Image (cartoon, rainbow over all chains, first blue to last red; front, side):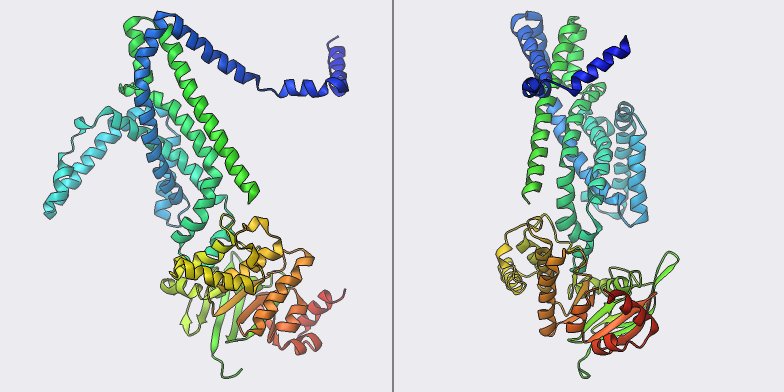
Length: 295
Length: 248
């Protein structure tokens, strides 16, 4: 029976009536999921506008949007720099630099992000601070007071949690982006570097004028996707009591016992931000591809 | 020809790739204004020799001198020596993200620090010389293979090089485009530019070369004028090679 049914189904697919093909194809290709997504936003907006409990939750939680966006933007910018430098290090001919880069990437990839955030905030930053202190004392002995003074005065307790969160996110994402940059650079054929070097350019001139412009163009979509990921992963910094939207939603839920309202609002807020960003990334990707076609 | 000074001197050059000696004791002198064509079966070391001359490959043993400057082991002046040697590659290796004009001006500007307007004037002269000035604003991908290779030649000429190296410049081209590139190269040879050309184009070798160098198994087997080489090759292996490629 089941066999017969599949056979019939196959025949149906194999010979669709010609008249309906066009319309059916259009129906099949229509992005229905967008309607679902818009439905979620409309429904949530409706809840916020008509129910006092949702309105309270929304008004309370939206105060964290600034921190979430700010944390993401700064950490992303730092991760880009760290990633580019590490990516260049990973392909360096200098054995020490190349191994240091690889070690960094492998360590970060091997530890869960939540654990990394705790680790960097409570182990990494204090270690960094005491290193700077020691560096300051060393400068003091050399008599370089103007450098020594600010270094000695840094205190671990004085480093705010937001700063720790940003350092943690950028160190983590720097490792991911290093791999993106490395892949992008290695995707450019060897002939490009050879042509540039044959013209008398130094390695760094060739990198800057020939290799990186092409490599970065190739990895723009991947970098964009990472930005969306980072926006989502910034919710992890709530474990450091940084008042991003996740932390504020948690506070609101705990205080008002309106768990449903708090977490529905929180989830939809993230969804809205990532949907807009993803659309931007797709647009960017299409533009890069168009440029490629026209050249 | 005798009083012209030595442009390139290759002394006892050896290059090893893994267990293979791609070059096994090569000695070669190229004088100013000479056009040297290197031929030989694939894997004989022709390209490796060419790429050692501007140090794209690091020689394992031996020395290379460019106009009385030692290039081997001379990391400091390598870039300045390289900027005086133009190289044309089999696959053009134009910079795809830059326009034709930018391709020809970039090295002038960042290596030789020539101001933009002057670099562009020089670039246009050389683009005209290779007959492609009308494509200055195009991107490489918009050009045919032959046009791209002519741009690559203009890019190398814009370095105002003492020597031009050609690494199988027509091997990646469709047959109908080979002539336009060879015509440009013939004109350069007539202008007295010092050239070392690795090619399979025997017609070009016959017409342009002052001397033919035949290589096999990493060694120079024979060095002769085109007439001598094509009419009475001295060496058994040269004869075998010629009979293979000229049999059709």
